[in-house]
Amino acid sequence: MAEPRVPGSEDSLELPCGEWVHPHDLDLGMRSYSCPCGRTHAVVTDAHPLARFVPEMLVDTLQEVVETDDEFDRFTTAHALAMVHEEFPDQLARAECADDGQVGYALVWVSDFDPRQLHEVVVELLVELMDHAVGHADDEAAASEFEEQLAQFDAGAFVDAYRDEREFEDEFDTPA
Ligand SMILES: [Zn+2]
Image (cartoon, rainbow, N blue to C red; front, side, top):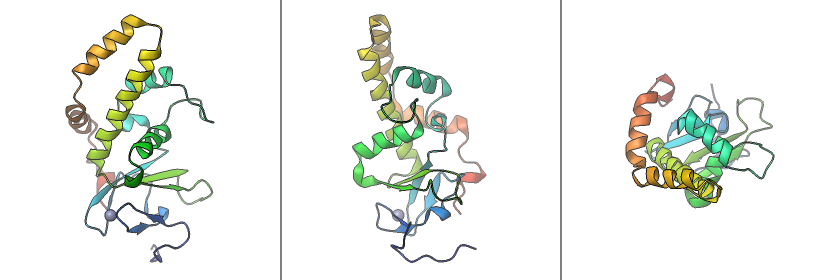
């Protein structure tokens, strides 16, 4: 049994809504958190693959075209969430748990957005990033082809279809 935790105690994470949660209450299988504030917040850890948000094919392309300037040599979920944080600093809480042996991840984010909203935000940011990266590439044909595809891209419809296809409503999505 998890012990009740004192709000604001060491290692606890203050959520954008003002509630507190301890990373030990957020496990790897969790994609959403039913918060005492009455809402469902999206939960993401750095152990989640980017394919949670976009197809592997797109992940491959992202990792090819996007250069990272940190210790990671490829674009990862952590980079995607860093982008969300940059864009919506007040709507994303983040905790570092690398020294915590009890969780299977090093970073965890809890967003004010629900999982569906966060998914759409991530997809929009990734598409923007790719557009930027492709625009800087030398291949003009590829760039204009991508622009064309982008003009028809509907992030909301994509997210609906992707979540459906990936069957996110599995047992791990059941709020604890
Ligand atoms: Zn909340």
